[in-house]
Length: 268
Image (cartoon, rainbow, N blue to C red; front, side, top):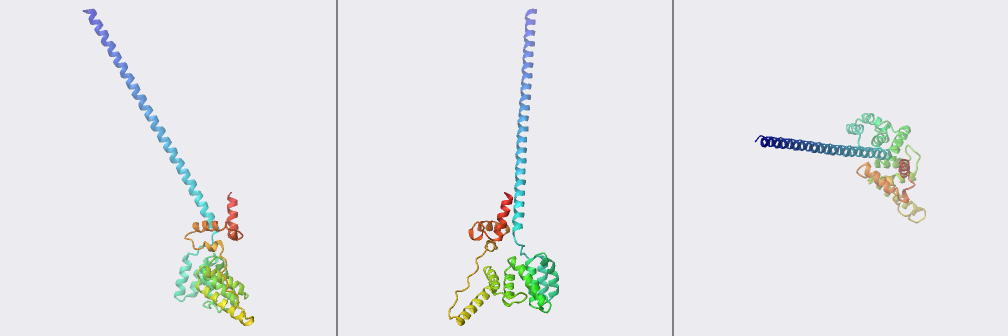
């Protein structure tokens, strides 16, 4: 009995030791599995963080490229024709009959290159609403019209053409008048179209008196790439349009196309 009892106790102790060993193994395995899971989760979070950082870097690079492209496009565009606050104030002043106030409101924007203000002040001088239409004042008006016309403002192109036709403020030059009238007419300026028709009729009548032949009607001037794209909705679409037009042989010699080409070469 003592021997059987000792064997039973030994068996029980061995079973207990086995169970404790199995328990320890299970705990170790569970701990190892938990650590492995935690490691995988940490690696997954690190990978997600790396992807997010890379996406953020790419987005920042894209934003920088777009901003640089917009700055480049803006540098090739003429000054905007949107009504600045000075021009709006000047228009309101002319409606009240305060022409001096209109000039004061538009002087700084005009000096800075605002085509609308340049055209407005030139109109006030050329109409005698400011000053007395002296030769000096008419030369100032013609210069303001010229600066605004070169920026592509149709009203200023017509006004400068009219000054050239009459020889007011500038030397009379019918060729220059026709050129500016055509540019304005190509942008839909109705007074410029009327002026072109009038000059064409006068030319036909004069030719009939002098030689009995009627010259062909004046043909509209070929539009430049800049003029063809002037009516686009924003500067980006204008730039894309100009880039396409500048690839055509008839536009490659134009100053705007040369600037676009030089800009592209400098970026490369």
